[in-house]
Amino acid sequence: MTPQLGKLLVLAGLGLVVLGAVLWLGGGSLLGWFGRLPGDIRVERPGFRFYAPLVSMLVVSVLVSVLLWLWRRLVG
Image (tube, rainbow, N blue to C red):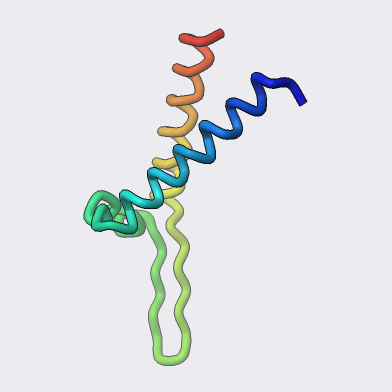
C-alpha cells in the first residue's frame, strides 16, 4: 500500500465521521427530502412495509459522479 493511498483512506474515514456527527447531532433536516421524491416507492400495510428509494438513489449517484469527476479533473 502506498503512503498516498493510506492518506486518502484516512481522510475519507475522517470525512465520514464528520458527516455522521453532523447528521446525528441535528442535521436530519438536511436529508428530509431523501426517500420522499416522486418515483420513490413506499408501501405500508399492517404487518408489511416495503421501501425502495429509486429516484433518491439516482440523485445521490449523479451527485457522487459529478464530485468524482471534479476531483479527477482538479487533482489529476
